[in-house]
Length: 298
Ligand code: ATP
Image 1 (cartoon, helix red, strand yellow):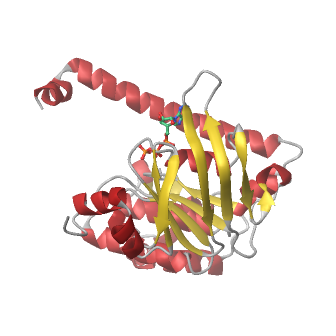
Image 2 (image 1 turned 45 degrees about the vertical axis):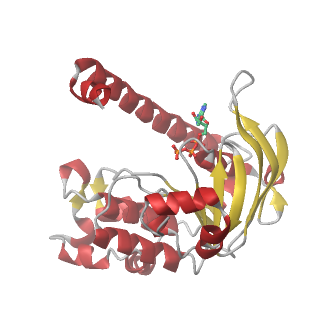
């Protein structure tokens, strides 16, 4: 504890914290560069908005490390995400959950095993088509400079007013927009109104929905949400899962107890899957996670 206190107050601790922030920033830049690269790739057809039936995902015997000299991150990952509905990935930090997203997006290739999306090996999808099918909502999503509307239609420039209104209603942001002085034309972000963590994540979901994804990858916000925002996010995700496939990395079990399927990862392996009730009955790690989050008495 003393060490932690030292870390919090010391200049060294602050420098380490700043370095972590810079590192996070660099990771975001890399991701933007990767997306920018995709845009210029001749093989990637400019299909910005996919539309279509929800798609499922399978991982079969996936073995992955980030580089030759890096440790193995996925030892043998096998699971299935059915098309439609909500599947949640849970497990301790470092289990390999975010890596699952990176592999589905094909930012990396597994060394062994196979991944399918929509029943087809992801290596057989043209990269542009694969990524156009995917919506990605990152943890603690940033609000872009500009108006509320610009934040929504970024990535879906052809979206109609009806589609924008629908995305706002689905993400429970319509009341908020109604209260804004200039409605959708109100500037947001550091030059305009400030949005809470929960609102920012719902803006990011609305932005992703306007691209009509067939699979939505959602990395749940780790920042503390108040009870109302947490409940809203839960409702929104459940509703979105009625029309597309949602794969969510859950940091709070309370958000996913109602998921159709929960996949429990630990140290690069899938150790169990099932519904919340099935896992509480059958999996010790899940029961422990649930107990620490006060969902069951241990
Ligand atoms: P968390 O809940 O903390 O986000 P996680 O279950 O999502 O954890 P991953 O982020 O997939 O876990 O990380 C699994 C392992 O891979 C960790 O040891 C991590 O340090 C490593 N790792 C993640 N991303 C990279 C990367 N881009 N390059 C190298 N190693 C990475």
